[in-house]
Length: 222
Ligand code: CA
Image (tube, rainbow, N blue to C red):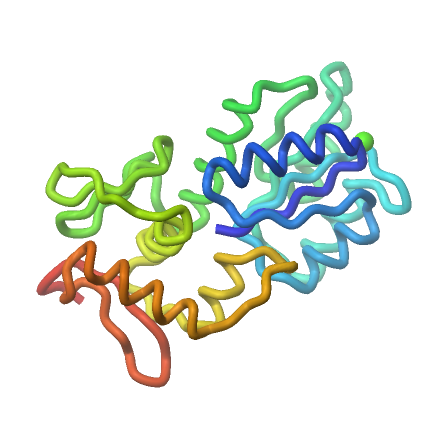
């Protein structure tokens, strides 16, 4: 999962970035509304954290422009605690959720997980695929009740595929959703990683669809 953080407070931006990376996300950041708008308009994010008070272009305008252009990724806005009108303006511009500053990082992360789950059609915090259970809160995957030993990148890959199980996911799409923009992307890395994950979860669940990509589905199921 890849997240965009648009926040002009450098210290808060850094804290968010650190917490998100620790939680297993690929993260891009912007410090003003113009750069943030550009990134959200051109890169595929699984969710965006958007401050409303931003230099160059305010958050409500950024969000309104994304929505007008058909960008439908979940957006969580950061608002000032005493500005109820900001929340109204944010929701009217197309926000999906908000947290008021100052906030607890754990709450922001929980809200973000919920937004990402719901965007891929999952209401529960545990996502199941055959013998696999993804615990989104604990950032772990269990197979038949036993936690799998996954590297952070393997977890990121498997979590993405579990959110999108049953779909054929192309290598390009995986690359775009697993790495931040500064990462030197090499699609062979994806293939190697898929191979390692396949070994850990059982061969038959993660299929290669020739020329198209990969599909995770329960054994025996489509
Ligand atoms: Ca601000």
